[in-house]
Length: 357
Ligand code: ATP
Ligand code: MG
Image (cartoon, rainbow, N blue to C red):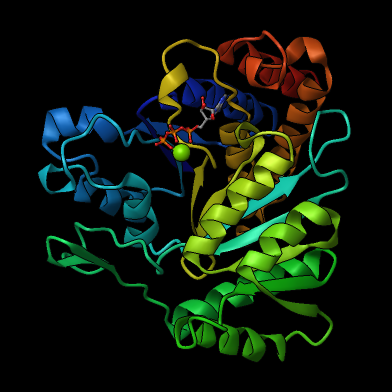
């Protein structure tokens, strides 16, 4: 199996190196037959090719690779979008139609957290909403009819809503059989209204699943008040983006949360940390690589489930277990969660735990 890797900007290269050390250990241990191929993106690609993400990289990811591990992109040091600063995340999500951004948030008893007993997954729609990939949909998304007025257009489709809701219910069937739909249909009658209509339609296909509809602002408060009450949470792109940061921070730290962008119809999957490029700590070997390591583990598990390959699922689960084992030991924690271990050292601890298991 071929995996494309794109370290990108900021702490991306550091957390990618640690992640690859871990995935390589699982590759050996479980005889996965993975090979890794690095591609340029972000600032390096901008310098060498005039654009942060080349179309042919996306085409090859779609046609020649089984999975992608994506680093983090800086949003600080680029010229304006028109000069080649394409959003790499949106490029992958929209370009590969990776509509399901799966973002778990789980508190661990042995780490400081603000949400004891929380174990939920936010199923965020990732190809529509307010987020256009400007290089693909020129002019759609935002516009300025005059210099003193800017407009933002939010695209919600029946197709997009049906398929993300179906993913949420499918996931709930493997978990506690509960799905909460997040909306603001009281204000956005058409967009959130259509999303809710689709949610109710899909719910009929899963009579065993308990459903709940929550207005986004109320849900933000409820998530803090009773985080343990939720199982799968399905949301459109923008709400899902914000709520997943809230949930992962409640779980302890943004640096602990893995995520994948996936399309169950094409079988394509991209692992991506939930956090950004952390420019304040880039190049210092202090970032916590947990988020990207767990993202890669989620990708292996997901690919294993899609293809019915047990050893991929075993490898994904083994990586997640090894991460928990390392985090459980205060002497193996990175700075953001109160320790003093470096990025590369943490990767080595996790890789060693996998090899030794
Ligand atoms: P970007 O525009 O790329 O999102 P940002 O300035 O928003 O950059 P984030 O990456 O979102 O930065 O990070 C927000 C804060 O969390 C920063 O202080 C950063 O150092 C910290 N942080 C984010 N990821 C990690 C990580 N993996 N390890 C340690 N700290 C992190
Ligand atoms: Mg950020």
